[in-house]
Length: 282
Image 1 (cartoon, rainbow, N blue to C red):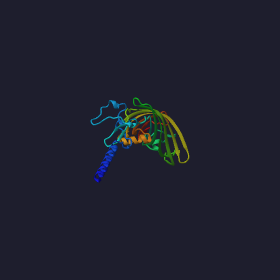
Image 2: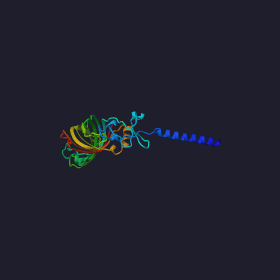
Image 3: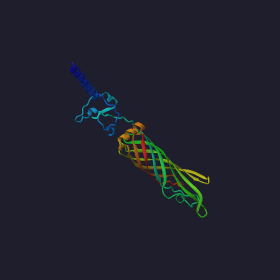
Image 4: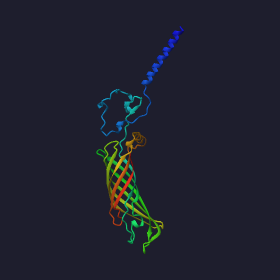
């Protein structure tokens, strides 16, 4: 009787363990969503599930989480979801560069910008905003922006041209409106060349430490181009986090070369601007 009781208990325990093990194997693990490799494929290049041929050892089944984006379950139990990203049609850009010194002569004719301030390029920081309503064949958009450039120098005496004690600060404020076309055709394109052009108004201010100020400006035009290098294409996890947490689609390193010409002989801003910066699509 005792042996029968022990045997019965051992059998019940074995059945319970086997049933619990089976339930654990069938229960889906609680896993966070993971990005799918196909998210980084060219736009429109991905075939539907029905058109794909399963790999060897892969079995397709209907799963209730498929409606939530579940596309695959790895052998280690990881649930792989396809992440839907929103379309980005706006871009913000911050660039730092150098502008050719303007050809400006003083009223006395004895000095000019290069002798009073600097003969080298003027350091400039630029901010641009783009809106791209057309993205079927590349990206065509409207670009507006502004920049700030400064140079420091000293005045000159009218009689002999010697250096005066007053210190001057020359401020350049270009305000730009133009069009930009980006040769970008894929979701995670590594390099995207672009061309841009438009009009600008270059406002200038000459500030003196003796309280005397002078303000002026001139209309101008610009044309240029550059290369954008996709930083988010280097790391899929970073791309997913930027999009899900901050709404940033692509993060780019930008290099641009621009030519500009002004329409005033007194404020001659004919020259070039070479700049580098960071841009983000959102």
